[in-house]
Amino acid sequence: MQMRTLALGLVLGLGLAGAAAALEADPVQQHNSNAVWFENWTGLSNATLVVVAPNGKLTEIQAASGTPVYELERGAVQDGTYRFELSAATQEREEIVNPIDNGRSETATSKPKSFTMTGSFTVSRGAIITPEAVTED
Image (tube, rainbow, N blue to C red; front, side):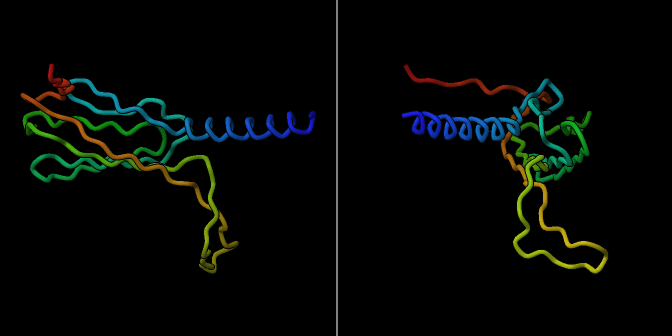
């Protein structure tokens, strides 16, 4: 009986540790009228935010630490849906399956695990808005 309890405790503990690690890298998109950024940034670094405007213009913002922030350009804002891709390195490490010896020193056998998130936001009348939820009654 004690062995089962110990095994169950171990499984639950490992499950919770895995869930905590997964929750660690779970940014939440935030915005005001002219900028988009992310909160809950724990455990992420070397971020790149790529934003595509409705007219196809591509903007890339990089941040070595902390959240990248996209700001609307004054006077050059186009209304519509802006799409984004956020990528960053986590604190977790993963094995490099086929390491390459570049002749400089030791061959790396692991690298930071990557995090990727996609989404969109809407601009109307020159400001970032939260679209209204439309429901049928």
